[in-house]
Length: 100
Picture 1 (cartoon, helix red, strand yellow):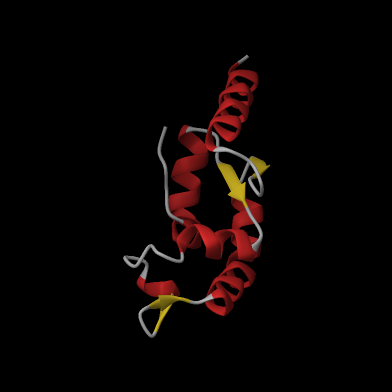
Picture 2: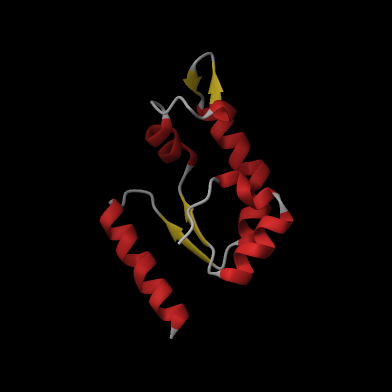
């Protein structure tokens, strides 16, 4: 399993290599959900404005990357309001289905 940042799909060579060697699962969430998860995560310079994560930047980045995300992913998982273990179980189940 390779866990990539959101910008990896902006490079078509990355997408080609990932698709060739595995299943791309996009973990989706609403901008507010992402903002709440990341608002204390300062090492994300692309989302920071005045030393704070900015909701507007999250929204803009998602909109800018939407087509790249959609075209790269084999599978989408909505993560809003869900616990990590629940999402993990869904990922395991999806990967098991793909393998068989």
